[in-house]
Length: 112
Image 1 (cartoon, rainbow, N blue to C red):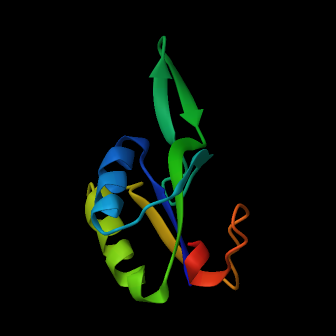
Image 2 (cartoon, rainbow, N blue to C red):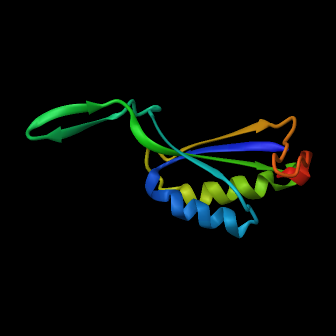
C-alpha cells in the first residue's frame, strides 16, 4: 500500500476530488495548510503598501491506496490540479506498512 499526499492550489480541490472519485477513491483526508516553494511567497499591495506574503494557502490531500492504484491516482491528480502556473503543487508517494480500521479492526488492504 502507498500513501499519496498532494499539495495543491485551494481552488483546484473540487476538480481533484471529482477526479479521484472517478478512479474509485472512496475516502480522503483534506487539510488546509500554508507553505511556500520555489516562489518563496508573493508580494501583495494593500492600501498602497507592498506586503510580502511568505506562506501561501494550499490544500493537502492524503489518500492510502493499493499498489496497483498508484499510477491511476497520480495521473488523476496531475491532470485535475494542473494550471501550468508556478505553485501548482507537489505529489509525494510513501510506503504504508499497515492500516487498521478502528471500527471493525480489519487490517491491510481490507481496511483501506
